[in-house]
Length: 302
Image 1 (cartoon, rainbow, N blue to C red):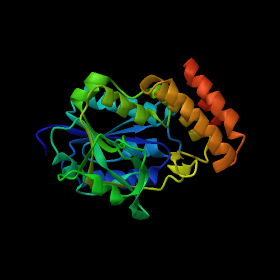
Image 2: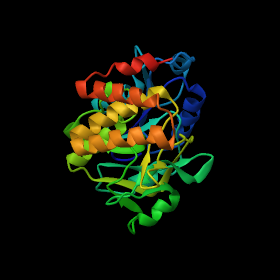
Image 3: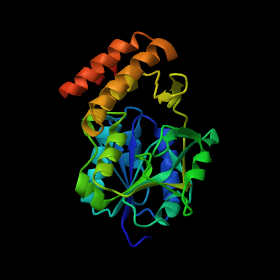
């Protein structure tokens, strides 16, 4: 075990087989002192299975309702810090860290918020979450991004939050917990922006990897390849993305970036992926975010 207390926090919702796979993997990783599972009111038997599970170091909380990834990580990170964690390892139930992932991350010192590459489990040379390189507009979709690492294998200033990332207790105490009202999409990015604003030392360690199912059309090229857009076929995800991204840009980047995002959204759904019905949904979501109304996504819940 590490001299520092390391607690893994897993947020789950209705994916019991994937959760079981992940917990089996975490049991093989000796650096983990405890695993805390936050169950977002699953109705697939997850709660009953967790109650009966006899896994050393495993504890769980089942929430009273589905609060999304944002609510789950808000609860889980606060729980871990309250329990005395020095480092918290955050992940969704559908990721699968390689056996040496945590050890590889721990080999890198002097960081506050750092994580692995998240690779497509069906095509491990592809990134699930494309990385926009610091200082430019280029977006990299494959593991060639490792060529941009420094000699120690680190890309400074970049991290894909909540997918196998480590965060220090000290940073959580400085910047607080993820915004639970975001529900899904953008809560992780907002947390990184807050960490960046606080001067946190942020990095991706390219030798550490988490395998994850493909998300789909993240980073879709548009405007003749000059930029990209994070498209999702899910109206729930799109609504949350449009609302939460508007809030993030207004609070962390300014109104010019907000307007640029709105222009991109209209362009994307008129020309790149013609779906004109997405434009009024986007407008309602953005307006709700500007008003501080974080309830509108509920109409899209199954």
